[in-house]
Image (cartoon, rainbow, N blue to C red; front, side):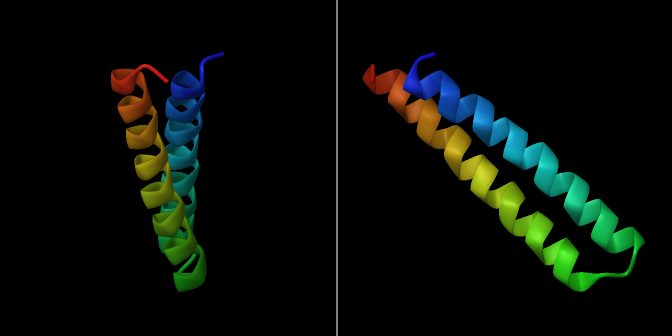
Length: 59
């Protein structure tokens, strides 16, 4: 698997996982879990964008 494709796939996975944690934190009234989910979701978005940039640059 190309590096760009791998980054995009992992980024999407982290976005979904982060969203799930964020919702679980809201439902259980756990601000730490909600914040952790938000952080992971943002990290996933960044990783996905890195994969897109790599794809454009051909890496």
